[in-house]
Amino acid sequence: MVTNHKEIWRKCLEIIRDNTSEQSFATWFTPIVPVGFSNNVLTIQVPSQFFYEWLEEHYIDLLKKTIKKVLGTEGKLEYSITMDSNDPAYQMVIPGTNRNDVRNNTLGRPAPENLTERLINPFIIPGLRKMEIDSQLNENYSFDNFVEGNCNRLARSAGLAIAENPGKTAFNPLLIYSQTGLGKTHLCHAIGLHVKHKFPDKTVLYVQTEQFINQFVNASKNNNLNDFVHFYQMIDVLLIDDIQFLAKKTRTQETFFHIFNYLHQNGKQLVLTSDKLPVDLQDMEPRLLSRFKWGLTADLQMPDSATRAAILKNKLYTNGIVLPDEIIDYIANSVRTNIRELEGVLISLVAQSSLNKKAITIELTQQIIERFIRNSVKEVSVEYIMNVVCDFFSLPMELLSQPTRKHQVVQARQIAMFFAKKYSKASLAVIGQQCGNKDHATVHHACKTVSDRMDTDKQFRAMMAEIEKKILI
Image (cartoon, rainbow, N blue to C red; front, side):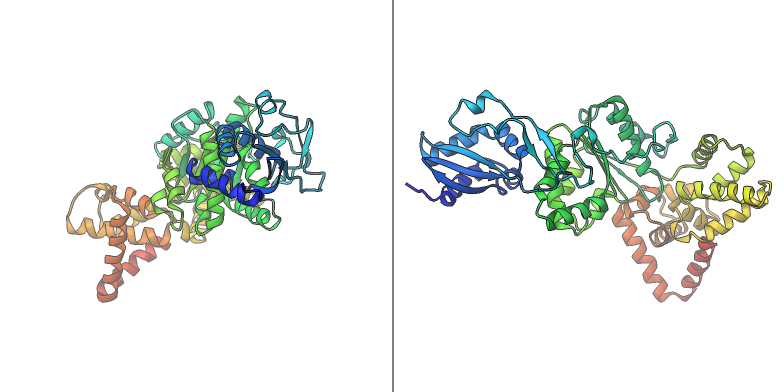
């Protein structure tokens, strides 16, 4: 009979691997270390009390059968729980399990009563307890001030449905995508705030992807990656902003994959935001991308002029400011880049009027907008570019969205796609959607066609330069 604890556990792992999924095996069994074997009892070291409880709750039957097969009917298993942090700022008191199903069988033993485990909190909150986790939500970003329009109705409705019943709808995960400044972050916070108000017992956490990556790097350096994972597994509603920044971060993606699986399998809610559709996300693990598609993918488009005016009025009302409708309409019709710039123009206008004691007039508004747009040429919208191109060719903008093969319309559409790719932050899929519901491959082909023609056709190149000047005015 084998008496070496490492060899015994190796045999156990062979059986366990055949009876679990790869991700479950990697998450729950790879971190275990065999530490001893005596009197037919195998002792294994697990990273935390949470880890021990999860094994006993979800894999007790598999462990029983495995130990019986490797050690015989008299075989037993004991746990050694790692307690490797000496910083009292990170303490969480977990009561003893006191579970008869563990205590009365020959497999394992319950943890001592009133075990104090130190669980590292990546957000540095002393005296961590689940209900004390700071949600990192901005109270100003609520559903009340998220103006609804055709551009965002699906995403807003899905977000509200989730907030009313987190983890229980088909929208899990909810992936919200759009170009910058159209309200992804606002909607993310609104969902979290609504959940916190309606379900005060649930733990909600908003985190930016770059923050998550930095926490992962620090946890890896400090050898407390298990605590990092377990912390995120405590969350009931996890809101991850700008998930595209996980690109090329292979190890971080793998860890997030396991966190995602755990939360999803346990009915927890995930909300993700991205500046691209899942199909356009580069350097992402296919298994992670496939999970992003499990629930609902909803986009936020550039609001039309009526919705932009409603956004401005909401902002003015919130700040107790009154402006003539003609000023509001002028701003709404002139600024077509994104909501951030729309609000930026409004703030600049009010500031200029207040500091210089000037009345807010159309002339002052024109000056502010011209200055603002000139300093923000890299964030023009697809809609704005389409409008400039159509004006140049004297075409109705609606024609670009119609399935016509007329040469002038096809050329205008391809040029609009080319400049949209160059100057907007929209993905190829979003550009295609706005330019006649074309796919990203069509946009890519259009851009190459225009680029190739510019290389060989001097007259066409001059025309493109003229259009570009109009876009950048």
